[in-house]
Length: 297
Image (cartoon, rainbow, N blue to C red; front, side):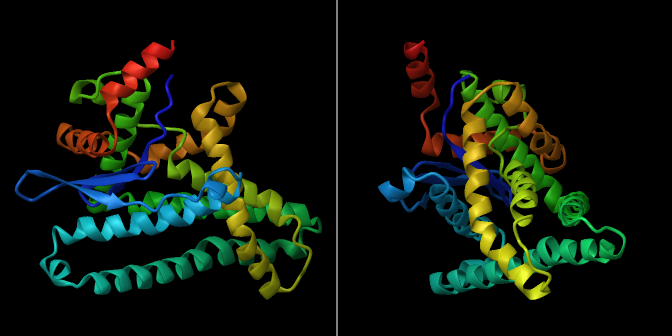
């Protein structure tokens, strides 16, 4: 299987794709047409690109900011008020949303599992068991959250576009011509998915949190926060290796993330696949990629 190196995410009625310093989003407009536009992607400094873990931390925060910008941009095509906002106003809204989302994520996915697992201290004396329990609770909360939001109509469609994104990438990485028919029969699951990344973060956090030796609630939460960039960096390296490698061990480690994608992706219709193809072609030449790969064999 070839490795393209491109990645993306689903946005409102569309798909964002990134290939190195090239980024684009494609959105299906209300009139049925597909709007495609470029996204500014800040290049990674050379020293960051060559430094394991650090490049993962950089990529995580850069992708988060870029992804939020694409979400707001896609939403603006369906909201006249957003179209009237100044660029400064849109940036301020993105910043406020990021801060709010970060605070909610800390409360729900970091503090709540720590608090609930702490209730078992009266019955469990081994700290590693408490940490393991915390990790299990965190994963359960995450799965329930994904399952619940997946019940809404808007998120269902977003998950369908998520499936279209994966199917397009899988299509070219299996050296198939990028068209609706080939994309339709490609898999909607992919090892480098952000969903897999989140699950790997949860698993690695269980190990690293065991090194936190304090009973002070504030310090435990603070140390967990300080460790999150390191965990993100390590998780990125694993996901990067998994995307490039094949083997039973890699497949076994990637399996939980692929299973969760059954919740976060849906089979798209052909109109969504067309949007995914448009986003890929805006940042990537699939025909040239296939020709180059065939020459290497």
